[in-house]
Length: 298
Image 1 (cartoon, one colour):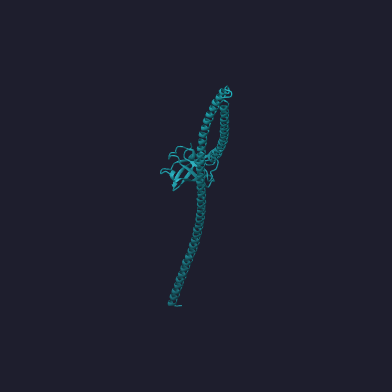
Image 2: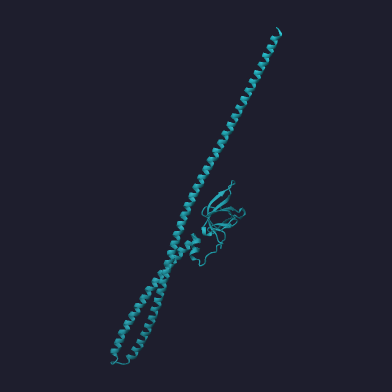
């Protein structure tokens, strides 16, 4: 084998080795990018699934919040309508009570006038009787006059009886009016028990200062530990104040104190409050929708 042949064989071996190295490098590069593509695709799919789950959770939470808002709006409208109806009924009761009192006063004035008339008739009767006693001493001459006085006396007695009958009717009517007044007082007592704020507005002669702010529990949120920590209160527009953040409210139900809350944010006609954890009552009564709230209790 000559030198040229050996050189040619060596060159072929080097070329074969170069081609093998190039093929191996190309194969490794291709496999590396395949693995990268597979990993990136898998990671992107996981991210897409995570985003899809977050979108679903957000949609569910938004739907739940809208449903709660609609329910709260409906309850607020029903409560407002009931309050207006109770105010109207209270106004009607006040008008009826005023008319009844005026009628009672008129009847009392009439009874007093009748009593004065009765007294006058009694005095007249006494005078007539005295006169008749004096005239009885005159025998035949005064008989005609005595007869006329007796007729007048009978008429006066009839008037007296009629006046007494009218007085009895007036007393009976006055008793009926007193019973009606007692029923109205019972209605007012029931209104005071169920709607104390309306009763105060009806019976109070003074207007409360602007420092008194009242609210109604619209929603309650619990933290992950199951403890109530966030309360949403609805407040009337005329009682809203500019510096309500930091204001403390007392939540109560009837005559039962529950807890204190502090305003952290004002939202239009609602305020968001945090529960003051060390202010719960001894029983730890939970807050419910519809509970009353007020910054001051009198």
